[in-house]
Length: 114
Ligand code: AMP
Ligand code: ZN
Image 1: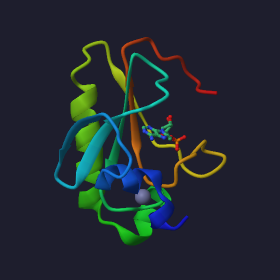
Image 2: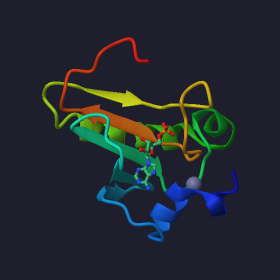
Image 3: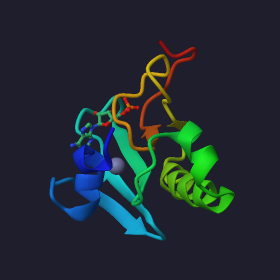
């Protein structure tokens, strides 16, 4: 997908509105529009990268660390625990082709996932 058509890039520029939870260090955290748990936040790099597999080719370990640390910091606020999910590709359940980490919390999350 061309990054000009990417909804998350449009959220980064403000062209599409979103509830921004926090922003900094090249990373933005927004509330998911279709929450699957009481807490469902998406953490994404401001720079367009299709997914974590594409990132291994073009990005740096520092970029991944920033993203995961930002996600973990949000998750840590929930004493009961949390889950970080990075859906990748069609079989991985990825529907938006801009790398993002789901932070899910606020209820017991079953395993295995569907
Ligand atoms: P994935 O299926 O892993 O690619 O996750 C994409 C997520 O983005 C889904 O959980 C959607 O609910 C969410 N989503 C799609 N459009 C928006 C939007 N405009 N603002 C916030 N979240 C969105
Ligand atoms: Zn994008």
